[in-house]
Image (tube, rainbow, N blue to C red; front, side, top):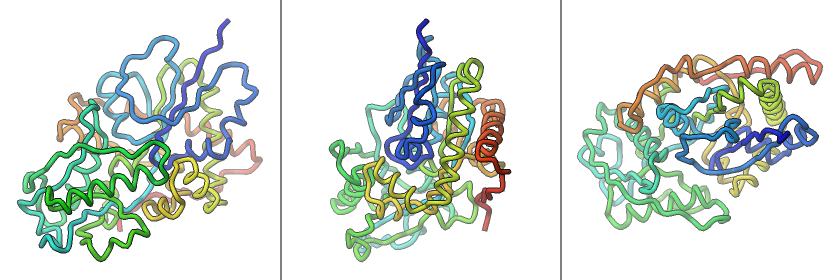
Length: 348
């Protein structure tokens, strides 16, 4: 009899616990001698696939929450079994010479929205719109008070170090310098010497409300096919238990975790650290009330922006039992009770 195949994918551009597990080899080691199923581990970008054949029915994906919401809204039979809240710096920028020096100066101005015209769902549009909305709201403005200028996104050559973050910044800076737009949102490279030329109008990490800080790059999900839960539950619990143990190791070895993630993502450690805060804690899976509230708010945001067309019930989409069982299994294996602290983002 042919063994079932479990397809495990992770985002190639952002830090996740799955990326760290791959970098450290913890998942591959756990299932190296597995006889119940075969595993395919891949780092791949978003796929608009919504129909899965019988042979493809077992899958997991660890990536930003927005594409998962899009797939669920298209009827994909799946569940959220874990969320991670990784804080980061997401500034809105302008040139000093533009006369735009504060959020209130954005009224009536042109804001860049980079997009991929070949994708039926573009999570970067969702990210940019949310960052702009949060920034504008600080001065009583909304997206209707600005002109959103859509620009095609350019991609750096595959394998280029710092490719994703750096190419995004270069495109944003070029749009500002060419006068195409008045403001952009992009991460500034740590050693580019560019701060004197730019105004940081606002950084959403300053928002007091965690929900306001959330965008697709902050809240990530571990989403699995319902078939995997129903037919391979024990294997799934073991997978998630391995991620729990990997997170514990990251908490004890944060610098090693940063270096391993940077290597897996093809970025310099200093670049990764310049964007994200407390990576070791921020990639840990949880399903606390704050994370779920943020997920609900993001679903509503995507619906209102027309980025998804069909609403759905969030509570029935989330299955907390897998993470609960996995955490018990992980603690049992190390022979100690669960005494690890799991700090959650709290309003200031």
